[in-house]
Each structure stands twice: as C-alpha cells, then as structure tokens.
Image (tube, rainbow, N blue to C red; front, side, top):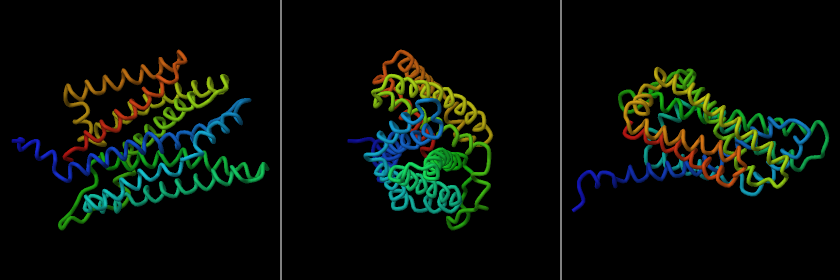
Length: 293
C-alpha cells in the first residue's frame, strides 16, 4: 500500500505545480532564447553585424511567437489551480507585469515591421525597438520572479493581498534577478546560434558572444546571491542552507564550465546540450526553493 507521504505527493495541487514548472522550463528554453536573440541583435557590431542580425532573424522566424503559449499555460494554470496566489501576484506586481506584456507586444510588432518594411534609415529604427524591447522584457520577467522569491507579497485577513504596488519589486534583489535572467537568455541564444549558423566567421562571433554572456551570467548570479541574503531570506536559506543545495550548485557550476569549454573548443552541439542543461538546473533549482513556500 502506498505510504501517506507518497500519496501526498500525488495531491492535485502538487501535480498542477509540476506541470507549471514544466511549462516554465519550456518557455525558458524556447521563448527565453528568442529574447536572448533580440539582445544579441541589439549588441551586434562590427563588419558582420548585418549577417549576425540576419542569422538571428532566420533562427527566430519560424515559431517564435508560438513560444508564448507556454507562458499562457503557466498563467491559466495559476488562475485555475491557485487563484489566491494568482490574485496576489497579479495585484502586487501588476506594474512590472504590464510593462513586460508591453515589451512582448512591442518586440513582436517591431520584428515584423523591420522584416517587411523598406530598407530605409527611418525603418531601421524598428530594429532598435526590437532589440531594446528584447533586452528590457526578460529583466522585467526576472523582476517578477525575484519579487515572488523575496517573500514580500503577503496576505491580510480574508486572503486579500497587502501591497502598495511598488515595495515588493522596487528593491535591489528583483532587479539583480532580472539582470541574471537577461544574461542567461543571451547565453542560451548565442549558444543555439553557434549550431544554426553555417558561416565560420559569424559562428565565431556567436561563440564569443556566448562566452561573454556566460561570464555575465556568473557575475549577475553572484550579485543576486549576495542580494538574496537580505532581499530573499527564504531563498538564501534554501539554496545555501544544506549540503544538497551546495551539491546542486556544484553540478550547475560544472555544467556551466563544461559549456564554456565546449564553446572554446568548437564543440557546438555539446555546448547547446550543456546550455540547455544549465538553464534547466536554474529553473528546477528555483522551483525547488519555492516548494511549500
């Protein structure tokens, strides 16, 4: 006969939570790479900047807007299965959420206008909007996750959220989390593009971008960890309070180093697998830290 602990794991709420995490992971691996592609588009420089942007557009083009379906799955499941939490998050964080959705809309419109508009200087501004929106939106997404992790969203009598609409997210830790997420998405996109690109010189450009983005992720992750000590005490205690947590972080560090080595030695297929594994560990680690919270 199954143990009570095992049956508790099969509770409907836990099953839905697992599905939400899977959808979040799918969105990060697909939509996150699309955001990262926009960041790379914004940062493209040098004599091959045009070739870099064309490669990014080819990689993003086929299914890019469809990736937002995973975000919709997360929101709908939260609304249906955890209405109190959904209402609290959407109320307290409606400003960064609104800005994030505006960014998603702007980048989609700008991408289409740039792709089909005439090749004139005034129309090239759509490319700047696409890159800027792609850079800002993942920061806002990270701000939302950072604010949720901080524990600042609290409920009053009757389950109503207590909020002034800014103090939950207008603090250093959520923004450090946003910068970390932006650099992670840029790393993921650049690594994917090393596999997609056929031109050796452009591929080498993406390789360098991926390595730099990986270093940026390390720096912003350290910054977020420092901020978490006071900005998200529960998250800090979970990720730094046990041997299992340190072991998981050691595995994450090993995978990240392996991805850099694979990039530096031109083993791009392996680098893509390791980049996906790195992102997966980050998402699962965050989800595990929120279990029961």
